[in-house]
Length: 307
Image (cartoon, rainbow, N blue to C red; front, side, top):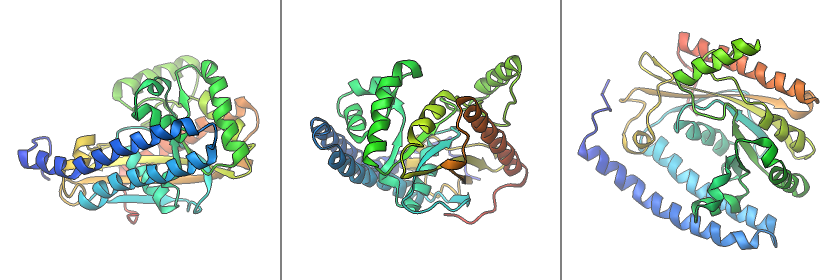
């Protein structure tokens, strides 16, 4: 198996050649999105739809680099996700590659441009990039859900009243997985007498509860999608390439040896419990099951058909 930790000049140049046009397009897209921001209070649906088209083109381009030009073979398994369905999406978070896994499913269902992620509130102050995310309708949050309540109420109200199609995506662990954080999460669960999922951090529940309680009022939001993201490289469990490797290394799967796998479970939103405490337990149980699925993959490897 080739060692990609020793990067050659040719690989760097290749990566720059592939990504430079995309980066220029990303900059132009951010400028265009920022110019839409003053129009948002006047024509929110128009801005949402235009920004979705523009975002979809940006994300499909980088997905093309990852899958087609750099040969990443993404395996999709689990429930069939209906085309065009709006949903709340929760996933574990390990690496930059996680975005590619989610985008692969979104592209298959025609919802790539409709993906909306929770973004850090401070980004609103960043010219172009942050302004563009704001114009798109990305929910801007801090680490305090109490402080975010009024802003999120407004963001969710727009989705509900205007029935804007969306995948509202959250990495429920609130941070990327690391072994150090895993041990801290285990210790916290032990102190608080909570079950701890295998291979995952314990999920943060407040954001999930707020999202479900708001969006279950929207008739077009039909489900919660629970995504389990898994990587392997040879015998290395949960080994994912770096962001730059995803953009520069050719034949990521066939020669570099990376396996990419996303497993989807669909839960109709009307089947979810109604109280905050029950929703917290519901998400906790999904993470326990997700950890069990990851452990099964660790033991057997992934053999499903690529997307």
